[in-house]
Image (cartoon, rainbow, N blue to C red; front, side):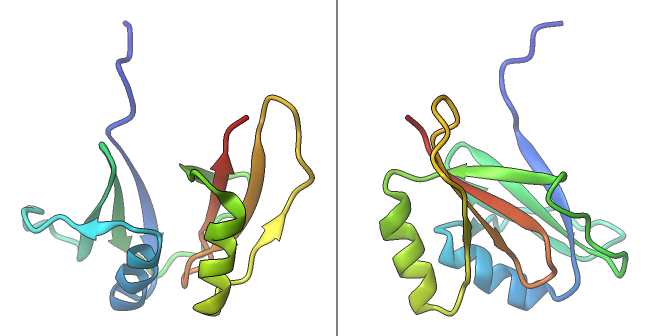
Length: 117
């Protein structure tokens, strides 16, 4: 097997409307063609990939379960998010890992913002 890429990641969210609004802040848009499933949710387009939001009442995982969004200017992104009330935890630069910061969505899911080296 030779994978050609990641098509989507799925995460559980507690409040779909608040989650959609949050992921809109990250520049993602709702995919209007999501099929009707037995669970409520939304598909968010993030460049060529998608983030699938699935409504769930289960607790959210910690930092060990996260996905990363590539940004072209981490500081500008953090400034913009801060203006919207989103707090970030920024790590020291690590050569090879780039500049990194972590944020939480309204359900507590962890998202890494990554500006590659």
